[in-house]
Image 1 (cartoon, one colour):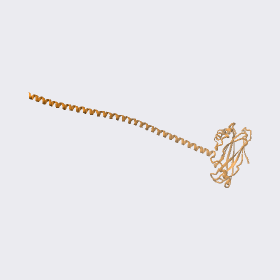
Image 2 (spheres, helix red, strand yellow):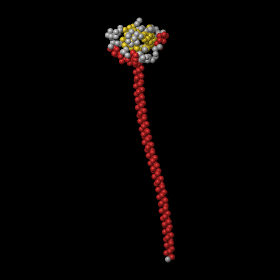
Image 3 (cartoon, helix red, strand yellow):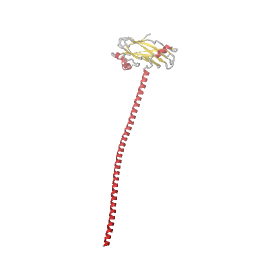
Image 4 (cartoon, one colour):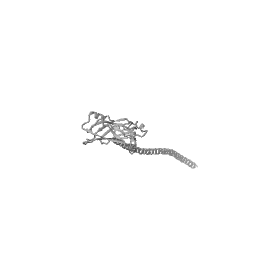
Length: 277
């Protein structure tokens, strides 16, 4: 059975279909916390390239690969689906997924078709920037599918099929959460880096202040050493002056003693001469 998405009557694109979607090649099972997988095919029925995005409308751990891709005219893309039920399904609960697409603008196909990364950034940016315009012009086409679950546990082939989905592929909700966590961590690291740089600058300021203080202290020490040398020189000069003074005083005393002795001899001589006369 093939599901078809019909163009709106006022779209003016001149075709009555844009793409078709095949059913799941393998059913999903109601097994709780059992990983399981399936495939379906999106086929272009349009004469121009289209941008296709696939997302889940359920709350389970639902992963599709590729989640967004460019589909050339009248070509097909096989989609791998991986599912792990996080909680037990309620009776008659179904799994839902949505296929959305709009035609690419002229010249966009060449640049966007080269983005083959697991989470194509260029495709997501283009989708987000052109989504509202496509809705306004009636160029967005959406089909939501309901997938019934089969009772029992998935066989080994279904579980093996689910493991073929690349582990790094996340749905848009998980991807946005991870990007938010990364942005939050980045902002925290930037704040911590700024705080560390500020602390380093403060410590560097203290180090520079200590260096200036040490330089001033060294200058003071040199000045004190010069003053000490000057005082020692003056003390030495004073010591030399004191020695000279003592020498002069001693010489004067010796001369006075000689004078006294001479005076005594002269007195004695004069006394004797007077006595004779």
